[in-house]
Image 1 (cartoon, rainbow, N blue to C red):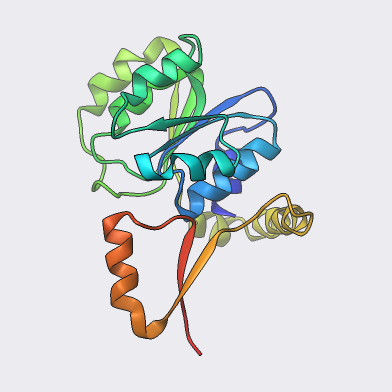
Image 2 (image 1 turned 90 degrees about the horizontal axis):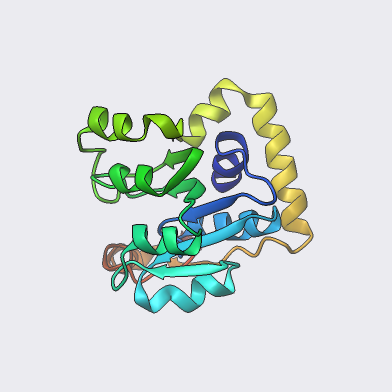
Length: 202
């Protein structure tokens, strides 16, 4: 639902548009890749070296290894210098600057997490630099949508479950028993996980 909301409601996703998904091998990233591909978008994934194959398996048309490649340069190369229509960013920190650099005219950057800390940087200067591209920056917290527009949220949730039932969406879930909570945190902090990691309570 988080991925669908950001793509469709905040990002105007549709066939023919392009999206850059950061942390593409994570739980939200995995769903974003699959939904964006289902909608007919050109899907670019940014992930670490050991997860490139995983991102391709989830539907990415192009995968950028952020550890060995310059993400901004690769996005512009892939898009023929045009940039992407949408970026989904759970990183934040100093990353907004590069997000604005890769946006196409009228593009949108959606921030939905702080893996590298809260947003930081000279936003006034960065936004002014891209003023003539008419770009937008959105932040996304799914609970805001749930609380303020419950009817729309429910309708979207029904849509997501319909797509899930067709088999188009393939959630990738790893479960560990609650007794291994420390191990779960270790894996998350080390960046060793793909898809969603959950703790099960027997």
